[in-house]
Length: 105
Image 1 (tube, rainbow, N blue to C red):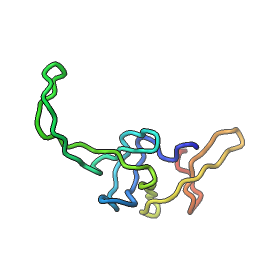
Image 2: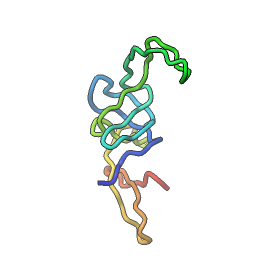
Image 3: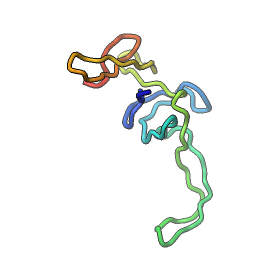
Image 4: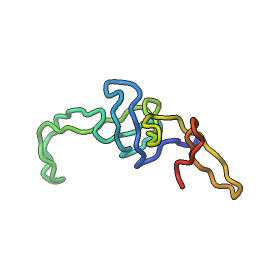
């Protein structure tokens, strides 16, 4: 199945502890996404002088399942579902299911 959510998309979290938060997709790993400033966790990290990593408590974003995010539609101000439309020249276009308006120009 083609991914409906891509890196750089603005999404809304629909479930979990950060429900309602908005952010940009930083990375997509299969069925999981990393969203900026969402699902922040603390990791105790050992220092690694060779890699230039300082030790201590590091806060970073953890991944969340792709089913728990929806693409943000600026026209309605809500998170909405995405569908695909195939154009005459064979290109695939992502569209919002509610309005049918194209996402990528």
